Image 1 (cartoon, rainbow, N blue to C red):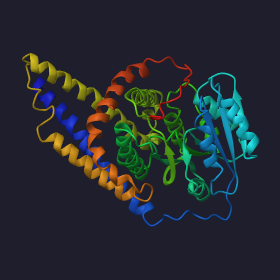
Image 2: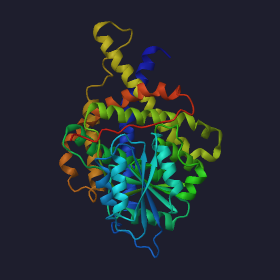
Image 3: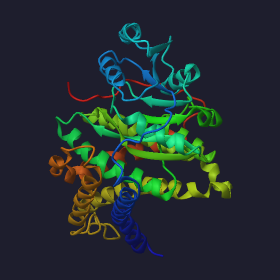
Image 4: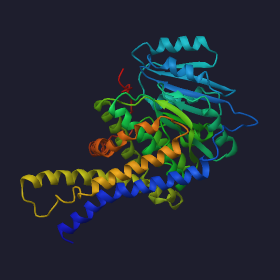
Length: 413
């Protein structure tokens, strides 16, 4: 096989992979909606509601934690506690938490002297939790009042459910980057979660809002403190133990997203590094036939990594070809003249599908239709670049190195 044929096949993969996955996500999202979501928008009623422990890891959250707790205290749920874990904050988070504990008997606190990472904070919160079920929520997230009822139903009715991941929705929408993410969380993340649930295995619970059966957490060994994305790692640990992981779109949680390129890069770099760390750590699934249902999830993520490298390889060759004469023609496949238009059309169609399935949770989402056409140009470039940079770091990272955290970009203020 000569070089020109290899280039031809690689260019086909660079174009066809995102187009194919777009149709897969749309089809999976529609199947999930029609089977499990369409006629069920009233929160479920249970004879007995289990006690929940809501764990909130905090690191330098003095500006957000008050509002977050206020929303927790408005939950439409009979029995729950709120555990705030201060992970060595250097601002006044500790004082704010102390005031919140004094103001409500539902609020408790754990104080860590040093920054030990989000995973350590979650582990400490779980150890002191009184509930059989654990809900983890980020310190800047606002939970819908009905969210716990939607989550509790899965655990009560299905004993093999080990975790339920919620539906993050973008709250800040004042910039181009945040408006694009409104579409991303619906057209990409929401549809992917629905599709993965239909196929049987979810790649990851959402770190910003997820619930767990304590028994399942203990069986998986809780959160590992050396993983950059502890949520992806824990999901795989649970699924390797054959716990069922579910996506509940009616568990709505409003979040703040990055609105600067620096903040977005940091977030996507962490996601990319964490994803590769998980692939490296859990490659042992290929040695067990019992783990075969995880194989397609592994392969799909691995394909996205290869796509990132091939995409930027072609971009690089294209620029080189402008100046020098290359032995093969790489200008026409980057991209074919009709490819960009077709991908943009698929992106818009995907957004219409997401509007259809998500219209109950975000009444204003349709007005952001225009901004989603920029997703392939802005986010594919950033996400693929972070994958290229983060992959070597993940592959050569020393085992056991503790993953600490910094306060993320919470939007323009």
